[in-house]
Length: 399
Image 1 (cartoon, rainbow, N blue to C red):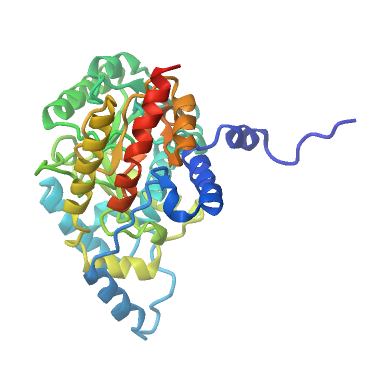
Image 2 (cartoon, rainbow, N blue to C red; image 1 turned 30 degrees about the vertical axis):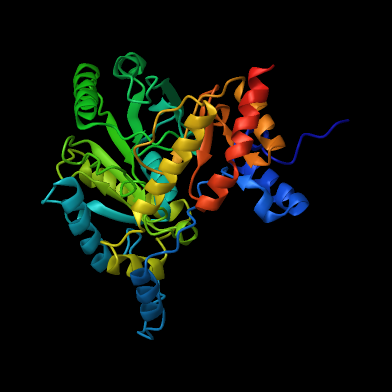
């Protein structure tokens, strides 16, 4: 008799359709071993390659060498008060909310940890979270972790918010709309006017259905905006707003797993929400954000990598894609292109792989017919792929 699998069926299913990003990254490791590191042009993983700012390294060395008693001890689950106070001051400046204090901040294990404590706090079984598609694939797993259902809604062709589609997707089970700006995988930055229109939709729906609909803003790329674009301040616009972010991209420290959640100071259910998220931080196993990293980032809240380097890479990549005949929307932030593919996306990504170019099919982001290219790589890698991009699209046109 066949025995049932020892592993949960849900996880077996998740593993079967797990992230295309990781699949392509692992394929890149194989190709680099076979052909050599410098012969493979890997645009698969959004792993920032710029070094952290000097101020971060200096703060890390100074704080790590501090022998103060209790420096490695347990702390309140929401984080160190001194750190939260500094973060609140930064959030107040970024979001034009002078009344925010340390009491509206929870330090987290990155934005992923932030999203998980948010969903743990607000979702009942089968509650729905709407998000524009394409979207970061882990969103579906995070929502499912807490019994909810992710509801992707296709964005407009330029990746702006499809407000009418979002409005139609709202049901009595809708608990939140989740946005990400600057956006992974498209590089879109949502404009202030479209966010205001979205918020009015949420206010109207909340009132008519008698439910609170939160706006959750995932903001790890906030400081990576190009051409002088200012990313709108969500907390300035909506009292039922929650932001989560990390220092992974602007300080180039993704492996350190440090970020925070901030709640609008006038959120009607603020006390219960913060209490639930703080408890979630503990019972999900995070306990608290890393003590050392909390102290370090508190010292460098005004620091960032040089965004001009990413913008220069974007412009180089845009010239290569344009010259080869790709159809794309110029990213306004983050470090991704999301061009259309001339044939089915998985097949075209395979053609690129023949050229030793690694991309991620848009299917992995809920948007077939596109591919994601991460330009957090040296300019030599981008330039080195120029001929391969041309050959791949020419082959596709001949099919």
